[in-house]
Structure formats: structure tokens, C-alpha cells
Length: 83
Image (cartoon, one colour):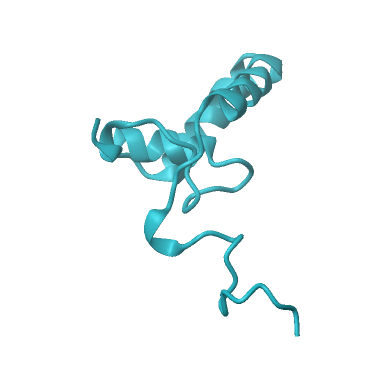
């Protein structure tokens, strides 16, 4: 499956967990428009269902893997020695 058709939590467009940014990337929308739509829907539904849905998506959606940027576990020197 192509990465552009997968639903990921975004590392690039995240404010809390990257759920809205990931949905925006998946739909081809701007992250701001998804966040505004999320807030409007949450306010209209007395906020609790929106918060509950966000928490579920946070745990269900896989995190986006950034292969080209390196991982935080590997240091710049790569030696593993601390000074």
C-alpha cells in the first residue's frame, strides 16, 4: 500500500498527537481546516464525544514513520559514548 493512501498520525503537522494533521494529509486538506472542523463538531456535540473520538484515534492510528530523517535513538556521532 502506498504511504500517501495510509492514515497516519502526522509528525510534521501535529499540535498534540498529530491526529488532525494525519487526517488532513490523508484527505489532502490543510491541517488548519481539519482542526477548525473538529472544534466546530466538538462544540456542537457538547465536546465530550469529540474528545473521546480524538483519544481513540490517538491510540488506534499508527504514528507516521519518517525514514529519511533518522531516529532519535541514534546520536549524531553514532559512537554511543557520552563525552
